[in-house]
Length: 564
Image (cartoon, rainbow, N blue to C red):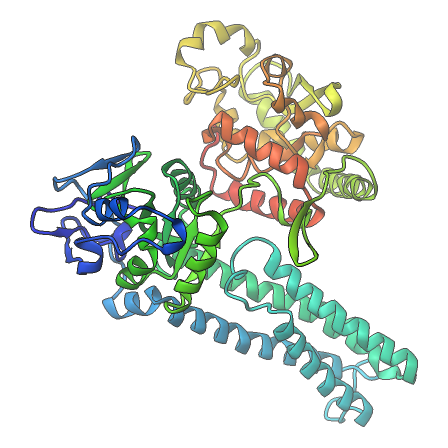
């Protein structure tokens, strides 16, 4: 996003790729956008006077919207590739086809390799002699398995651009399609007494799953890299009230790998030449909300994001969707239930009326038992495997500064219970006694104390904190049941005493060694954002989500930003 001026010459800084436009670049705006907003939609019921006022561009901007008649600096990412490649990867239709076709070829090759590996074993599970052909039954089953497997990957829409590179849904679809195929194969084998199935189940299934998920991870890494460079993005216009538009743009631009490149905004009653302030950025207001379809055509936008309630309500959104059909642009509705995850939301039609049901979160039961079993297994294995590392770190801490190797601190756990959390000592002895002297340097928000370059940290403590090695003893807290592998951040008692009413919900489950706060900024995360992430996790966690968080934690440890 960028501060886009309205020039006296009737031009504005180009919204096409505005986030990456060179400084001072301009483009001529189509008359439908530059000279007047298009006529108001008839369903809104606006008066003729109001229509004439808005068409003339006289509607007063809201308090969050300002006019800009100067030429401010433009923020952009430097071009890193040739213009031809940029054009290729900036066209959404082109890069989505390229990605899906590449995935289709990769899936075909990997499934074929997995089936061939199964064919290399005979029905007794032993390798066939070199040069000997597989049994005819085995060969036919392998051919059928390969075709059905590829069809299942297509039917389950594992290459849908909407899920590629976003969350766990892509992996879930691959796993679901694969397991259902082999489940069906097992039933067929039992019914028809086929002995040739065993090698496929023992070899093709695990090998294929590892290969398919691994290839998806590789493509995801590539896609994330391209998005961080401003390519392979959907050009989007955000529609709604200024406060809703600002929130959506903040969330989209929080990470470099976001799926959208924000072209501009359309606000109720806005006039041309207005800009919307979003933190330190300035977002161009391209038209009122009644000119969205025209603006999409003349900016080549791929998506329209409705950020919240808009004048006209459901009828406005319905007719906007009809208008966008002509432009092949997606209509995206930002969820107003910002702290409710998809698995808790279900649609149930009643007499033609679609009703959305939100499941109540549960804090006990089978899912929590499975989580505890995973905690015990992983923590015990980690303590055993990492024993040499733990002993080495203990020796380094002891040699670096006088004092105990382990630092014990009382933390608040599930339902307000207290426990002693273990860490390798990374500060001088009696570091808590120096808090008052350092309080003037506090950089934290809310109830947390944060300070960069804390003088209480020891030499070895600085690099241990950088890579989160000081937290390895917490695997013992997980093993004995005080903590979990993934969960909210374990708070101090003085923090809990300063909690607001809703913040106490963080204590409904066990705190974790890692969590959403750990992989989204660590110490750099604002207090209110850390609370929001913890509350979201408390109500929406899942085993699959925990596995993804643990994997992303390992990645965050190799790029230790925000640790101090």
